[in-house]
Structure formats: C-alpha cells, structure tokens
Image (cartoon, rainbow, N blue to C red; front, side, top):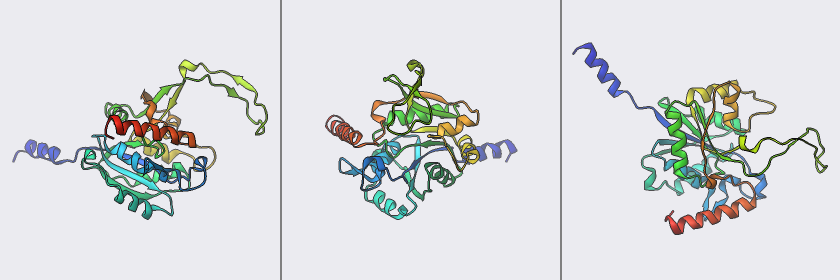
Length: 261
C-alpha cells in the first residue's frame, strides 16, 4: 500500500475533536437561604443542576458533560443524575461526575483535568443558570470552533452603573468615584467557551490564593489572550436569590405550556 494511502487512512481513523461542558456545582449557595446547596434546589420539581445538565446536553456539539460535585457529595450527585436521565433530545451525550475543590476555580480545574484527550473545546457553565437556551450554547461553541480562543455570551447593561471608592465600612454611605459609559458595558453569562489549551494554561497560571477572577474568561484575560462576546439571552439569568427562583419558576411554566419543555 502506498505511503500516501496509509497516511490518508490514519487521518480518517483519528477521532474527531469533541466539545465538552464542565458544570461546577460544588458551592453552597448561601444567598438562597438555608437548605440544600443551590444547585440541588428544586425548580419545577426537578433540581436546578439537572436542568443545567439537560440544557447543555441538548446542544448537538456537546458530547460530554462533566459535573463537579461537592467534596462530600459526588456519590449523591451521581445518584441524582441517574434518577433524572437525559432526554432523547440529548442524543448520546455522556455525563461524568468528579469531586470538586474548595473554590470554584479549583473545581473547574478538576473538571478540566478529568476530560479525555480528544476534547479540544470546553464550555464552562454555571449550575445556577438552569434555563440557558440551547441556541446560546450552540452559538458559544460555534464561535470557539471558528477560531476564537475564548467566547462569552453577554447582554447590554440596562441600568446605570456607579463605581465606588474602596474601604467604605458596611452600611455606610458609599462615595461615587465614576460613572462608566453604559453603552460600553456588558453583563456576562455562561456557558463560556474556550480552546482547551488556552483554558488549561489560564488555570495553571492563576494564583491559588488571594483575589481570583470571578469567571473563567477573567483568567484568560490575564494571559493577554483575546476574549470575544456573542449575544446572550435573558433567560440565561443566574438564580442567586429567592426572587430569581420565582422568576425561573415562571419561565419554566411558560416553556411547558408553549414549548412542551
């Protein structure tokens, strides 16, 4: 067999690069009040984490979802996901559970470390954004596939934002030092998408102590790597406070009536 033919067959036999989603779900979610961790709070009778896993798994480009569980709750999370299997719309998407760390940054890093070698695009999604539309997930993944090293869905900011001075005691009037131009601001969401190599380097170079970035794109920015935005969606909001949960219940109820969701 000619060498050229053998080379072509080797290329054809090589596995296609895959896209995986990492969902850190190891936090306690204290702002929702006492009770179960935020990711396990029920939404329409189903834990928010299950909604989040199903949301990203519906994307045709996602073939693996890695859920990063609380350090003492990996077995319970695995049982929970087994009790709520993915719908047929998720195709052959696999779901893996790994044990998280003490911070979100550490948990995402552990999720990254668990990915198989054929994954080259990684989406990082908040478990507390259970209603992100599949179109948003697909748009982020497609932008990474098109060559962007880091992609974030975002919405324009509707409120005027004030910057305050540091060091004001809690409960005291806060001095305003600047009013940023609202048209240049965006409120970011998840999933955030990355070239795997870029995200792995961002986590490897990130400080383990002190003030960390509030999202993974922030870690990538510190490398000097460009981050681009794609349109987000108003239903990809984060469920942080009790009022957010009320809104999420209303959105889910509407979907069940209009979309059979």
